[in-house]
Amino acid sequence: MIRAVVVDDDKETVAVFSDILDSNNIEVVGKGYNGQEAAFLYQKLKPDVIFLDIIMPVYDGIYGITKIREMNPDAIVIVTTNQMTINTQIALNKLNPSAIIKEPIDVNEIMKTVNHLCAPTIDSEDKMKKTLVTLALKNTLLELGIQEYDKVVSLLQKNYSCSLEDCYDNPVYLRHILKDLYGNSYADILNSISGNMKEISSQQSVKDFLQVLKI
Image (tube, rainbow, N blue to C red; front, side):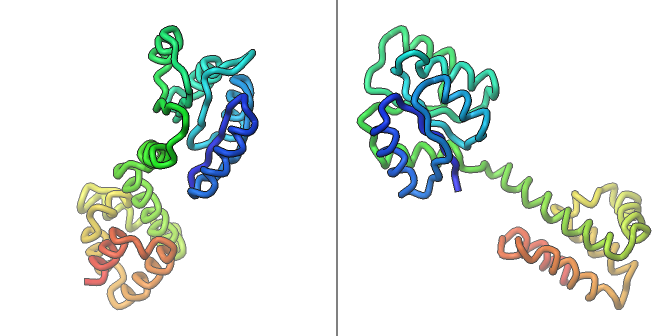
């Protein structure tokens, strides 16, 4: 679930906006009422996205986004405002907010913007799957013993110039190595690999990976 922080000097606006987000499966983990609290909440909670009003007394939204950008230049900051002066626009151009949404808030626009900004990229999803598959393979081999793990890794490098991580994209290499090493016990090895991938086995890329090993 996407985690959000909402900051606006109007407490009723914060409450209503938070309810809207919660009802759309966005978890509001923090609420603030000025730019200083925005920076503090971002540092403390590390939300996926922070909604930040610009016009606030004492510490405004410009202060808040400035401090957040100092902590994380890539932070997802969605600015909400019902007015925009030239000076404010100039300041925001330098701070590069992730999006600017004019009030009154349009729920559909908010959800479309949040899903676009916070959805993981295909590359990051694939990288995550690759990491989980590699971890499952490593656990399976270590269950056989550190010597067996070292043997498989060594043969992958020697025969195919690849690492255990590369097997996500080239499962046939792993299949050849494991069948040559374990022969009739290969089915047991495959069952162990499948068991260690149980939590991610519903994903199509993982199904395809396991299917190649079963051939």
